[in-house]
Image 1 (cartoon, rainbow, N blue to C red):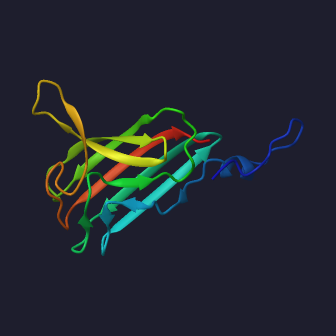
Image 2 (cartoon, rainbow, N blue to C red; image 1 turned 90 degrees about the horizontal axis):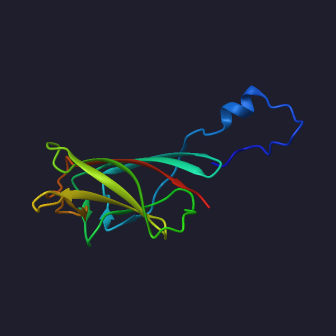
Length: 153
């Protein structure tokens, strides 16, 4: 949500107006390469001026399936950065309900949030987009937690 009030010099600001700034709102991101089935996606965001903070939790179900090369989620508010790749947050991937894998989230200029896992098998860790088999094969116990910030347009 944007600031709910136009503040003008000389106006009196109430506590209710100040408290409403940055309230969390729910949104339903569009999913790409994910068929959530009987799983769930919970997403919230807060916007203050041009700064947006978001949180996404995806819980897999027995009918959740994945395709393609990367899980993708849309942003709640249009991105304003001119960067092609905006490293903006992180989280945890728990594909089977067991091991936790740290992740980095990147927002592309077209508004796609893409989570990346770290591949530590080389001399330097590399980032690989998360998909149905990365960081390991996902099952009905899988959960993905992400949060981050970015500049809105």
